[in-house]
Image (cartoon, rainbow, N blue to C red; front, side, top):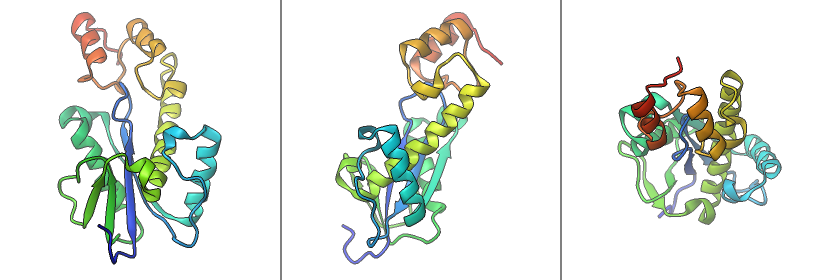
Length: 198
């Protein structure tokens, strides 16, 4: 696995399932002498705890975030776009890692580093847990900002996921440029209603 590696990067993504917004990935290389306590899958943490850990990681670890846009999700597919975001996150690290642990079952195509996929890695590997936290914080901030530009969809709370209120807003307000048109509920509404909001 990572035997002999000194700089191990954990990589995770967030935002595969939402109907709107980018998919975001983070890469984190922890400092073995300064690992924040309580690292876990970001979904298992309260917002307050997640933000506290994010601050601790920002001051102690090498972190980088990468995104793939809605347009890239549409052009490629969500899996490929997720991998693009992961590669961008890795490319942004201050120093090149010796080894990469990636949440999931696949290593992104085009990764030219030694790597190992880890299923449910965000609950099994501290560096992947850290990456899940950083990615979640970064994407949530984007969605809160987008919610200011497009009020009514509830993105500041649902983060673009297909909640009842979001689906209702899609019906009432139409589709924005930040919606993923190939995702079923959005595609269905476009196909039925042609109700596109510029």
